[in-house]
Length: 128
Length: 459
Image (tube, rainbow over all chains, first blue to last red; front, side, top):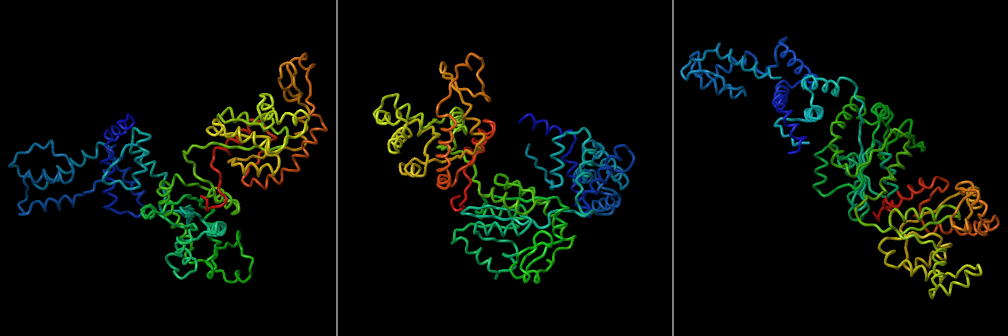
């Protein structure tokens, strides 16, 4: 590979630009704003703000969505889900499942679920 | 640029990504925000974009594709080349229109075509390509958006002939036509800006596809100028890598610099330089058979008869070095009869130049010529004086450069030149009253570029 190409690829990896663009695209498609460019500007501003811990990152999922997700996973209405399901949920959302120290028997309640989700999403955005 | 395969990478992002990779800013987010702010092109102000890009694909056996913003251009070009004009409206909506019939018949007539307003985006261009239609020339007219919006306000349509006029720039002279003109329907400013926006979005891709055959012409000038530029472009042939042996003829009054230019070209491009007078003298000096026949004429100062000269020339020009490297000939033919004989002898030049020089300059250059009899070096009293007074003292003037003789030679030249100019229709005219290197560059450019084709069928 040419040196220039190497550099470019390395740059992309370092700043995680492909993922960022992916998220931006997802946000666009979800919200379908009238004025896409302005929307994108707002989103990026929010990312900047979140970075400085001044505001919230532009999460695609809000709390209601997380609740809904939990109830989808918890089919029987037991009030908790298994770690395996938790891991799957995280994977579906594209969040990392590596540093989850959970026993296979742990019961994940809604609160734990929400906390975990929030933490993970925050983590994933904070790289920017 | 590396292949960027991102699963979700629409056009917006493509530009941005390219910019990012070029600049590699340390804070990509900030950079992206600025980038987006700069290229704000959606809907919040009046977007003054070209409203209706009309494109012509002119098809002389293959094709020329021209994107125009005004149908009159298309019309004129069509009339000029006697080609068929096809525009999107005629094809799609007005099937019964005479022009559409013509366009459909173009294949049989082998006439070439001009396509207007099509393709409008990349997909259409690709479809065109896959159906085997590729333009030979693409003309893209551009103008600032304000100009276009203004112009579209004055646009008027003749419903009968589908001709387009303008209230300010192109008003028809026939009062009957004037009565009929109506304002086209799709012409509100909103509509126009929307079309322009669409156009600007699609245009870069099309540009990319037709890049090699495309020429942009500024449409913000009088339409005759635009037309002449477009015409000049459409008549050019594309440069190919085919080897080309130059066979060049130089015509011009004595003192116009023909032999100098010939020498420069011969040096640079390795072409054989043949000066007719020189050739004759060499023949005499070498005591060849032909030389002996020529000798009495030269010695007595009479012009050598045409057939002898022609024989000498054909012999020289059919020599191997002339055939392979090409030649540049000055000093022959001097009149149309000789030119015709040259043609009959199968010696055909592919570039012909006429040097133009006003009388005063000729006089100035010739009457001041001097030669040093000792070294043979040539000087000019004002333009290239001899270095030392010693040399200057012994300089001599060639009798043929005396005032009276110059005039005689000039008169002979002028009496024949008009007929020669008519005979060599595709000649180039050189302003010989300039610096030799400027002239040389001009001649060079004429030789290197393919000849523009006046008759489109020969493209």
